[in-house]
Amino acid sequence: MRAWPVAIVVTCSALAVAPVAAQRAEPRADGRTARRAGTRDSLVPPPSSAEHELELHDVSFDSPPVVLRPSDELRPLAVAVQVQLRRQGHELVLGPPPPAIAEAVGRGEIALVPRDGHLWLGVGAHGGATHGASLALAPAPTSETIRALALAVESLLDQAESASWSTRASTNAPRSNEVVYLDYDDTPPPREGAKPTVFLKMLLGWSPSRDRILLGPGAGFGLCVGLHCVVLEAELPLLPDERPVAGGTLRYRALSASVRGQARVALPRALTVALGLGLVSRIGTASLVGHDLRRTTSAFGARTSLELAWRVRGPFELVAEGGLDAMLSDQRGRYRLPTGQEEILEDRWTPWLMLSLRLRPAAAGERT
Image 1 (tube, rainbow, N blue to C red):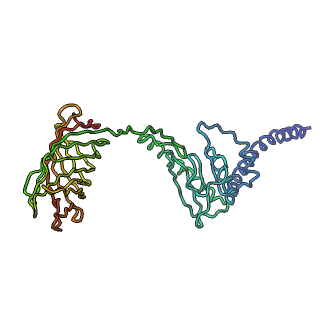
Image 2: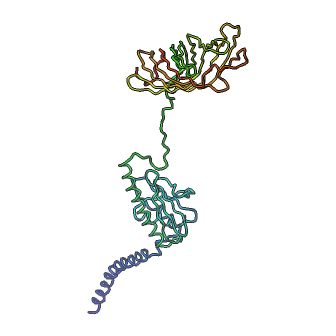
Image 3: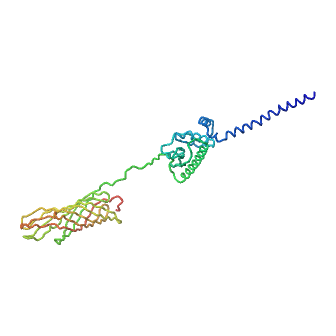
């Protein structure tokens, strides 16, 4: 009768110890499972399991996701890197392949391409910059390659973010791949139209060959654009030129006409200085006193001048001008005497001075 209670105690003790042993065995099994899940082989999930894990992960991020744009042959590797970065707290989405020039990726995008036997990573940054790194890794999705690429992506993202803040602090450069339109005023600048100029003058010349003064009135008109002008002018001596020749006295009087361009520079105190260059022609009549032998002659040459003008009031100017007429040797005017001898009527060089009152509207910026 004494053995029965003992059996009862032993049985109850076995029943009480069994649940405790089961509870202790479960953590050990879970630990072995966790250790097996933490091996290196578990970092390389097959594409199906990687995509399944991405669907199961529900992580909220405040910033927009970074787009990983791998080349077609590196897409399986990019999926594994995406999973690894998700585990590390980075949201990453897969995008289309990068452009032909991988450095042209936009801001917030990562290009992953093979280049010269290496893996090249490039992150688009603020202002169109690209931060890149070349890793001597095999394109196979091994655990070492995945971890190295994940660390490289994190480092490049940190560089791009730091450069973005420094660029924003120093300049207002546009973001990457933005099109900036600058509005320019296409209104053409105001142009000065041609303004007329008219002047009256008194010519004072000197004839070296005849050793006498040439004096006569003149007039002219022209068009000015700004400070520069083109003028057409004429002078007529008051008295004819008379010289003794064989058989009598030769009388000669000619009208001088010239066309000149004037390049003018404005000076202080309402002064201007101008350099002129043009052509001159003289057409006149020559006759032998006491004889009915009147002939029309012509001469042709060049005229150069230098003037100084002072604006008196409004458009009116006082002008002092000096110049030189140079006649062509074959176009100096000739007169054939009754004896058959030819007399040259014009000098080769004729210096002259001129005083004139001119009406010339002031150009823009010219002091009046």
